[in-house]
Structure formats: C-alpha cells, structure tokens
Length: 304
Image (cartoon, rainbow, N blue to C red; front, side, top):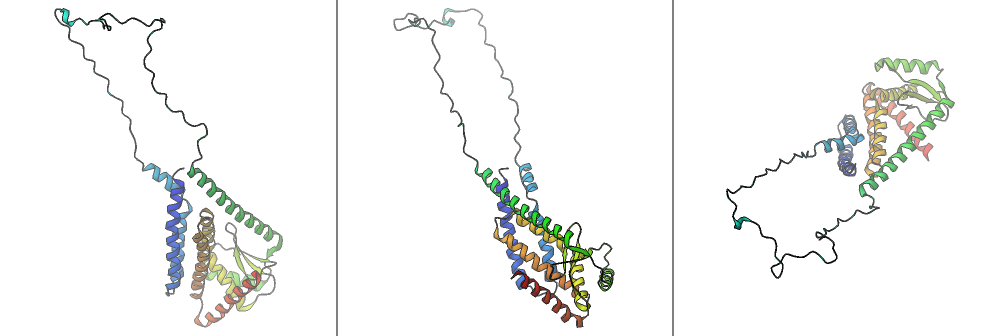
C-alpha cells in the first residue's frame, strides 16, 4: 500500500500530459476523421488510468527476492593431546597483587558479569504514516465522487420510470425502425417519450433508451435527431463517457481530469456527427447541422 501514492502520482502525471496533447490535437487537427481517432485515444487513455491497483502488484512482484541460507555448522577442532604433560603446560591460577589468588567479595555475593546496554524500546504511539494519510484522503474523495454520481443516476432512473412512456406515434416508430435497419443494428435501444425534456437524448448503459421530448416532432427534425442518437448507440459513446466519469472520480484531485470529461464529450459529439454525415447526401448537410445547432441552443437556454 505504500506504493499507491507514488503509482497514482505517476499515472496522473502521464495522464495529464496525454490530456494536454489530445487537447492540442483537437485544436490543430483539421482532418475529417480527427475526432474519430481522438476517441480511440481517449479509450486507451481511460483504460490505462481506470485500474491503478494491478500496477502496484506488478511493481511489488518485480522487487528483489531475498533468500536466507542457513549458516554452515561450525567446525570444532579437537585440541592436540601431548604425549607427556610438562609443568610448563599446566595453567597457573591467577595471582593477586601479592602473588596470591584473588579473594571473593567480602559480602559473599558472586561476581557479576558486566551489564550490557539495554536496547531502546519503540514508542507506544508512533506517528501516522504519511502514505496512509494520503491514501485515506484519496479514498474519501473518490468515494464522494462515486456516491454523488451514483445518487444522480438513481434519481434520473426514478424520474424516467415515473414520467416516461413508450412512443405511440407511428411516424416516429417507423423512422426509428428504418434508421435501425440502415445502421444494421441487431440490438436497439428502447424508444420512449419523456416529459420535461427539451431535446432527444440517449440515456442508460445497461438498458439504453432514446428519449424524445413530449410533443410532435416530425419531418427532418425527427429523422436527423434519431439518426444522431442511434449513431451514438452504435458507436458505444455512452460507455466511453461512463469510463471517463470513472477516471475523473479516481483522479478527482487533478484538474486536468475534469477537463478530460469535457473533451471526451466534445470529441464523441464531433465523431458522431462525422459518422452521421457519411450516411447523408450533401444536400442534407445543412439541414442536419441546423437540427444539431437548434438542439444545442435549447440545452443552453435550459441551463441558463
């Protein structure tokens, strides 16, 4: 666990450099399919940042392994026994100051060996580890972000269950099925009408649905709106946005990760428009653009 702050720091620095590079590419690239390739770059970057824990285990696995080998047994050499003892080989008892053996202490106690220094005892309350404190702060922030997003999603699902209903307009259902066949969608989202919406939108990851605002939407506006949302569903953009929100929750302390969410939103919209225009004739480009710009204006008016 002590490697977690270092791993997060290394990942957030590398991710920040990638975000700045992709932001610069979004401003400088003028190719037609620039947003499409940037979306793939966002996918790879978010996957790289989404799960930092396996990197820690991998780093610990590469740590040097210490092997403790048992010490070999000591070789005891037997002393040589002389053939005939001599008086010079006999050890003499220690002599005192006057040549007499030392006398024991007067108090009758045995001589004590010199005392060894006592090792220092560890402190009873060691100071808290800085790495553990950083991990606790990071977990608290990530839990707060995930909790907020989870509560918002649950409230939105509750709103849909209360105020949404299947679309009964035959023109809308026929246009939806026709566009689904053109896009070769074997699995399609639900088509619902929901009160309180300003523009059509795609919502839901496990049970996706295209939500239409309450009221009559006909003609080109309905066709272009359904084409835009079905293209989002075909590309799987909602999964990329969810992954970007997960990365933002993990690296909430980095302002550039908040910018990452906005850049992912921008590039998915641009890439969706590029794919949708490829299925339209050039004479429909202007009408499609007007439909998208009108939807953006309605959203901006709602947030103001």
